[in-house]
Length: 574
Image 1 (cartoon, rainbow, N blue to C red):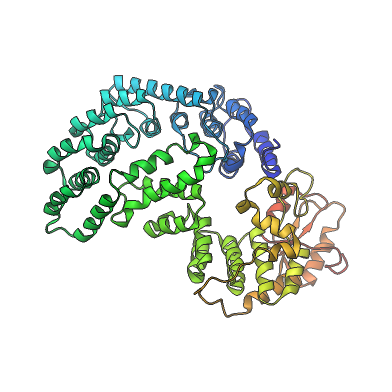
Image 2: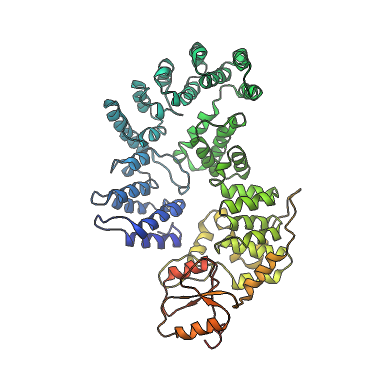
């Protein structure tokens, strides 16, 4: 598993060591850890094709249906001719067959042409069976079919357009588009706007006469969509039709502005063009993805200046295109149009706020989005050290980003002595790579990341590994017109207290088993020092004492939560 970070390798071995081997139920700790591995390992697991074997093992008939479902999710990361066979044919398997999106998968993930062909044929075969029964029993099948660019799928849709309204979105042949124009009334009303956009994008000016014939009898939302598409395809001569409709309407000026946009972008149906990229990122050549994702993000956001998208999923796909473009400015545009998308583009959004010196907005967003460590890091980089330390004090986990933020912000706040002590005494914990012990930072996982991970994923790790020079190399000047820094020095005092390692009033956890070490003596020394013992590795614990034997997972949990190990001599008489 050399292509996978060491910390992920450990978690793979750990998770698969506890999964049921002979059809046992997937529940409890094993289910939770498998879910976390799928979520957090998604950007890396697809780098090693041999890991697909674990997915094949999970979908074997003797396994429980829940484990088989998770196996289908696992195999989504390894598109191939073999994984394009629907085994088992359940909802997740159907979705995996159609899934041509990259999203958070490893950037080298690419659907082979042969796998696309087999998956298309398998999905159309399922759709043919549903069509024969005149009923679609699967919720995922129409959504999976939205990814198909094959003319065979278009031919199937054309035989029963009313049944497949949910599957119509951005791909279709001219023959299908002509059928849809004739049979538009057969399409359920909730799917007609997507159908109209698809028809206009595929047929171009050929669609105008039929749209003109239908526009007068259409409901108002469909009527407006038709009129904008007619203007897009036929030009300024059709503006009069729109003006007749806009008389007495609210927001008429905004709708006129949209019409001007369409005149300036003749022949373009931006939502359809953007969706064609969003639905196919995992089949695009690797070198083209960043640029195409950026263009698709622009397309999906183009019309939101005039009205919200009627379908919420468009914002989600827009967010993934923003992430694929790696452009903070595009993240700002998405959040401005759809604030609910902040979480999806969190990292890029925080970078944009820091670059523009929006201190208050960044602080609020970082806390809301559980990214106080990232927000503090960007504030420190962009010249607001006191605000960075203030935000860092609210972070719950001792991450490389948090430690980097403290180190750089302390230096920029005039306390280089604190920076030196942080780098010497208060580095973040390394990732677990085996059961023996938690390695010192940077451990094998972090060293691998510095060599192989993208810059954004290793920035804090590389800076901390480079010592004070590495930390300072990341600093940038505060942007012009940036909001002022925080005025309180209390955050610096908080860093000083943490580094001072004072025991009075602190909490201490005795971690692991105490066989040779005298637990009673240690307990008495803790209480004599003015500290108190806690019964578990709870968040907020200040210190821990390592027993004779302790699980490495427990030590990692404590150190991630910011607890520090009490060193020899810090407790009197111990």
